[in-house]
Image (tube, rainbow, N blue to C red; front, side, top):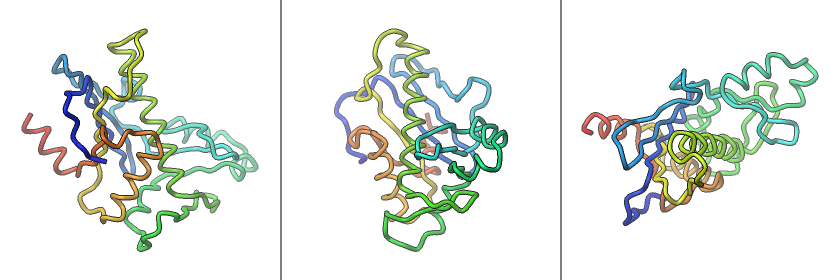
Length: 192
C-alpha cells in the first residue's frame, strides 16, 4: 500500500478514522472544492459501530449509538457494540494481527474484522457521496480514487501495518491507497 500511480486520480478521498470521531473529505481533480461530511450537517461523527449477532454491520456513527440505546438488554447482549475501539492500536503490545477486542458487553471479536467492516462502510459511504455530488448515474470506479487514510504519528509500525491490512481487507486497492500520518496530512492541507 502506498505505491504511486502514474495517472492523476479523478478523485482524492481522505478518511480520518479517529478514536472518538470519524470523518472524511474528498476533492475532484476537475475543481478545487473540498467536500466533507457524512450527512451534510456534521463533518465528523462518533466512531461507534453496532454489529448484528452474525457480525454484519447494523449501524455506524450516531445511528449505532441510537440503535443500541433503543435495544432491550437481551438484544444488546446478542449484538456487538464498539466505541473507542481504535484505542486497541495504542494499547496492544502483541505483534499478532489476530488479536481480539471486547465490545462493551465483553463479547470478543477479531479486531481486524471490526476495522475492516468500518473501513468498508466508510468506503461505500464516500463512493456514494462522490456519485451523488458529481457522477449521478455514471458508475464511480474505485480505480479512479486515490484513497488517503490518516493515522496518528504515534502509532507503532505494527499498528500501521494493522491498518494497512484492514484497508486491504475492506477492499481498498493497495496501489491507490496511502496511509498518511495525521501531522503530515495537516501540513499538506495548510500548504495547499
